[in-house]
Image (cartoon, rainbow, N blue to C red; front, side):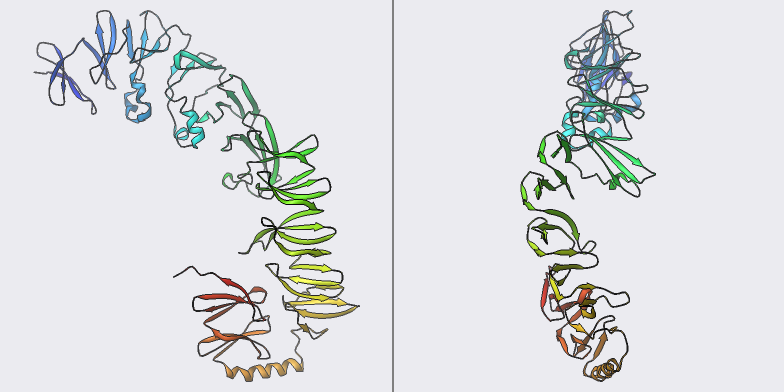
Amino acid sequence: MARYTYSQNDQKFIFAHTADEKQVFFDTDFNMYQAPYPIFSYKNKYFIYNDKDLYGAINDRLEIAKFKYPVVDYYYQNDKERNQVSENQKIIFSLFKFKTDAKSDKYGIVNFDGKVLVSEDNKYDEIIFPFESHNSVWCNKAKRDVILEYVNKIFICKTKDKVDIIGPENKKIVSFIAPANWKFDFSDITVNHHLILRDGNTIKLLNLKTQKIDLETTVTKFSDDIDGGYSDREYDYKNHSVKMIKYSKYGRLIFEDSKTVQHYDLNYDPFLQTTLFMVKRNNKYGVIDAYESIVIPFVNDSLYTPDNINFIAKRGTKYGVLTNKNQMLHEFVYDNIKNIDFNKGYANQQKVLLVTKNKKKGILDFLSGRAIIPIEQDDLNFTEVIQGRKNKTRTIYGSYGEKQFSIECDTLYREKNLPYWCYTFIKDGKKGRIDYYGNLIDNDRNPYEITPANQENDKTKSENNKDYDDYQILEGTNFAIVSKEKKQGVVDLSNVIIIPLIYDDIRYIEKGYFECKQGKKTVLRTPQNKVFYEIKNNSN
């Protein structure tokens, strides 16, 4: 009958001393087995046994380890943190310290199969089997694959002022002088097999393959990036700018740039999507990536990118646009190219190109090359709206590049305190006014000025109000939305029907467009009652 047992929650047997001092095991079916050797201790599912003057190990399947030494002890001693060891790293429980000379103050490390991982004949004060942290587990796949090449396969071996990393076959991977209080972390291994050594504001990239330092520099916010390179961020609080310093996968400097930001936030870093880098070599510009691979050859006299995807390039006297695959998006036939944000801040915002060719200007769609405004204008102005000039004819374009009206004059502009749809023009020294749709307004008169003619129009309007169930004047315009028998339309202030009363709902939106709904169909109509755009409705 057993009078003494070792017990742990996850063991598959009971170890007991019988009344006559024999050591036996009981499995889960209470089958009894006699211990092959006297058991000395138990920890982490392994027994250490004594055989005369030597010691060995037995696992929970009662298999005997392939080693015996004068001194044997468990490598992992921390019972309190035993349950925190990940399943992936429980291999540590099968590691044992050993000594061939009981009087020696040095020990080696052997695994259950009898393979010596660190020899006893060493100079180390401390031998560490490193565990993974959260950061080394939850990282991108490329980096994770590299880290797994070292997990469960290395030891961090320390002396007073030096560190050796020992790998399989007791082979030294790298040796280096470690910073004070340095601790190994798997997350400091990069996709390029660099080990990042941090010492205050100084970092070193130690190449685990070549055993060389590939980079040593002072940093502020250093990181290994998902593109395979490295970068540092320096924020200038005085000038509100952030500087990016980019290094290649080899640790070589490839790029520096600064951008103005009011407040630096890592989550809204202006360089967050920057993975391609414009570099100057032999007075020519090209684009390389973090692997120093040439993406766009060094044949350009200038380069600019608005989005890190497409690049406006100059070769000789001509400009063109290249993709980040070095494909020709726009040929090198333009005298100048400038990208602009069309309708910035609006739903129909798009990136377009203002191009100059043979002294004529136009606007092209950035990606498709479609001519939004033909390349035939002598000048294009974007002060408030898009205004083009060809000889003496000036043209106003709408928010989609559509032509609103043209007028031959010397100057065309907006005056303060006048409605947005009203333009003032000067021709042959005389001033006139025209509305957004090309209709002339009484010359030299403010449209808001009260005149007998205006008063007469007001009388007409009030009389004609009786023709509708509802009459709503749109402030700052010449229009009113009217309704009759639950249908809506638009009239001008002379009561001329502009849009017939056939719609269920009409809303006025900027620059003279009307959103007209009829059943499930919604269209944008101009004051000329032309359908400008049909809004797709995906709802049932």
